[in-house]
Image 1 (cartoon, rainbow, N blue to C red):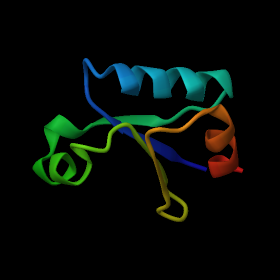
Image 2: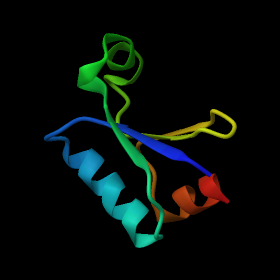
Image 3: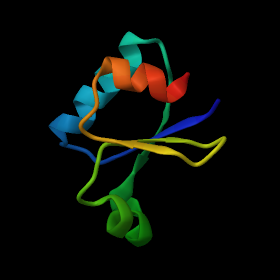
Image 4: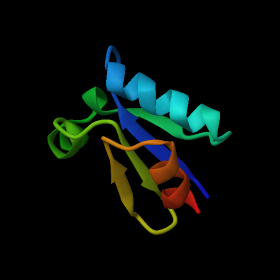
Length: 73
């Protein structure tokens, strides 16, 4: 399953989300929303957001490691 982490640089919450992904051994493509006006409008106040590319579902912050595990299961 392909995952995307919508984030931006200098975002401490995004860094926390990256740590959670690493703790469960899951890799996600990192997409900086600043590079795209549409993404910035969609995710600007919600990041970090993990998106499953297989079904389009999204998990927005705040989430913990258990919520992340359930989301990717």
